[in-house]
Length: 105
Image (tube, rainbow, N blue to C red; front, side, top):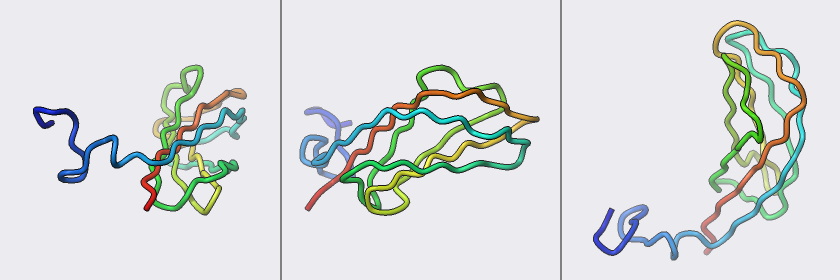
């Protein structure tokens, strides 16, 4: 952190770095997962590009023993991976907020 604010990737400021912002809300009902397995689902996020940052936020809590992660897997496509860490994770349908942050040249 610099005295003037947040510094990202060396000397770039957050304002200069973030040039694209896309968000969607989507419902998913992942299959039951037994650790150490996972389950992927994809959704369309128009404008998302490879290398963009993805934040996945469940509207309700995810079941104990589970985790989620997201990334841009292709242009306009985000993959959400549901991970079973401990035991069997059985989730009901949930809403997820997905935020994609990008740096555009």
